[in-house]
Image 1 (tube, helix red, strand yellow):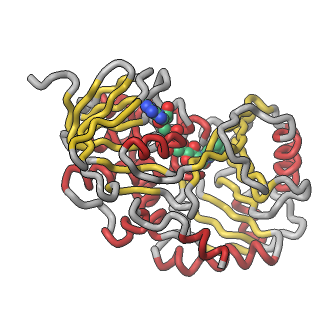
Image 2 (cartoon, protein in one colour; image 1 turned 90 degrees about the horizontal axis):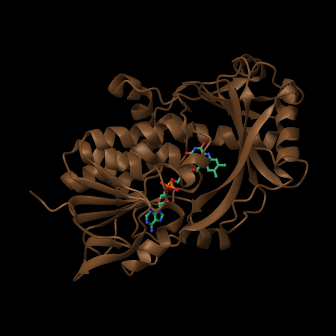
Amino acid sequence: MRPTTEFDAIVIGAGSVGNPTAYFLAREGLRTLVLDELSASGQGQNKAAIGGVRATHSDPAKIKLCQESLDVFSHWREETGTDIGWKKGGYCFPAFTEKVEATIKGLLPIQKQHRLNIDWLDADGIRKVVPGINENGLRGGTYSPDDGQVSPLLAAESFTTEAVRRGAVYRYRESVKSLVQKGNAVVGVRTEKEEYRASTVVNASGVNATAICKMAGLDIPILPDSHEGGISAPVRPFLDPLIVDLRPGPEGKTINFYFGQDANGQIIFCYTPIAPIAGTDRNSTYEFMPIIAARLVEVIPRLKNLLIRRVWRGLYPMTPDGSPVVGKAPNVEGFVLGVGMCGQGFMLGPGVGANLAALIAHGSPRIDREVFDLLSPARDLYRGKKEALK
Ligand SMILES: Cc1cc2nc3c(=O)[nH]c(=O)nc-3n(C[C@H](O)[C@H](O)[C@H](O)COP(=O)(O)OP(=O)(O)OC[C@H]3O[C@@H](n4cnc5c(N)ncnc54)[C@H](O)[C@@H]3O)c2cc1C
């Protein structure tokens, strides 16, 4: 028998990325350990997500990984018998201004090139997809019916259960304090309680990823910034898609906002602050509800009668170029990264997890290597920034 501290793979973080990664590693037959410093699965930023899942991006790597995520989420019930709140309602980006129309139409060619099911609908078409939408200035919009929503809470629980069913071990309230290294290889981790060994260690530690990378001598900048979200009491189902309104708000505080109705009938919503709020402050603000309420009612006036049940504030693990950092760490053997998910870690999680597990078990990802490598940890993470400054 192997000692209880020896594994094939260790995943640091039971979050949006770590849980599906553990599930796919266990499916590959690898003895997997998941460590989280919190008291249960999915208690980091995973539970802050509103659960939107779409493949309709413009970056090819995000498109491919999210197509894989959609496949996992949409078949999860058949596969495991567990309901994770999957709702195939699509995404809708309505256009109320010429600028937004040009932006979303500009993305269509690349989205079509990747065979994504997305189209421009005229105002009449959008009215049908979003009953009760404010028709004032409505020019049309894009609609992608194959995208959807999932409950992040149910998904974390179910990925964990299914990983454990396949032999994965979860240890909570254990924080990784250092990495065990042999030459230029990572061969394990140390927590405050124990030293564990494995030939592969996956860093899926979300907003803590920079500190864990530093333990291996790597400089990978993951910078938290905070975003608020909220959810209403349930109302009768009337809204299929998640709506993304790309207009900056008239209050001067929001760059865009998005919302939808989940599988329980609850309206779930959040906005992007006009200036990123750097740091790890997770206290709710007094201004969030009045601002988002005005934005919601402006897009769908009948939402004025909603009863709000709960608000929260979470963190996006941001990278300088706005893209995730996924793959083998440069110049460090046995160390794999699934970090820097920005505002899309929940939808990327299963795709990233499935590809990291394939990379670890078989030496290559499931999607095209060239596309996968667009997210390589070896890239210049400041390239977008530098280009923007030119
Ligand atoms: C308001 C809001 C709405 C959002 N909506 C969406 C959405 O609709 N769709 C979407 O895709 N994304 C959304 N996101 C973004 C999403 O929540 C994040 O991108 C995602 O959760 C990040 O996943 P992760 O696995 O990297 O981090 P996490 O889920 O935070 O997991 C990291 C885990 O690592 C653990 N950890 C850290 N350090 C250590 C250590 N030293 N030792 C042990 N454990 C450690 C943490 O406790 C944590 O559990 C939203 C975010 C916010 C705030």
